[in-house]
Image 1: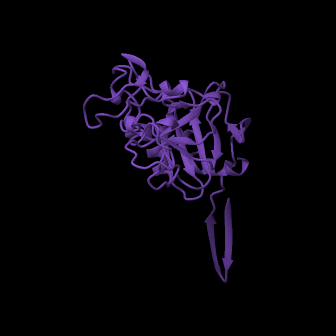
Image 2 (image 1 turned 180 degrees about the vertical axis):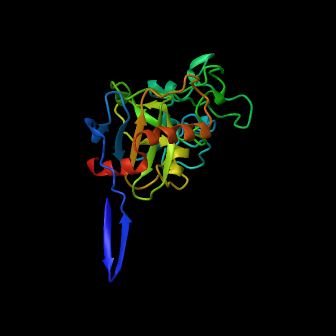
Image 3 (image 1 turned 120 degrees about the vertical axis):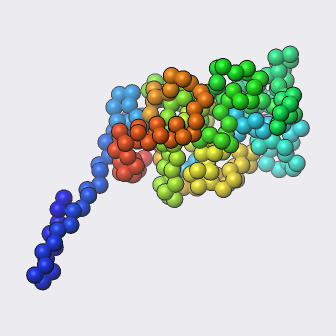
Length: 266
């Protein structure tokens, strides 16, 4: 759109870039989150102000000495998170968070050496298939990689994609943003908005604490997921590759300005 301004005898023109209109259409809802998408099986978006951080995949996520401590009131924690938050040892699903000991399936496997000797091996749904299940490097480190967690029921929903898919998150309140990869499938009825410690920091968190919930990023965060974009090579993928891949995918949908134009619909 071109606007002409007349001041005295001066005639000038100013080109104003029209804001894009949201090209994402109503798709569905998951719990209290509205889902919009561009096309069948295409990229989709949602927003949430409920952020939780997940320590899974970090080699120092859980420590056996922390078993029995109160998750928020306990003192002297060694691990980033409380074993009880990973279901250990009383919930059957703990084996999705902590690798079981092959010699005793009722116990978590403890790292026998290395920098985090004595810690459990914490796992993620996305894995390096070339490595042993007992190797902490097999999994996606929450402290080093921007990843998103999908609730189990959301992950099983047709059209949401797979672990290994790419995405982008934008904090609408502070303007901070980050690419991410979907690396974890969480409890079936969990809310959307759970993420790695690294992603939480990138979006404005201050030393996010998965045990207490302190330091998580504040504000409304908008997410776009690009389903069915997981790399054929699987995992690992360098953060630089995640960022460059997401940058191109973001351009294909109209960029950050397109996402902002959809915010009011979420």
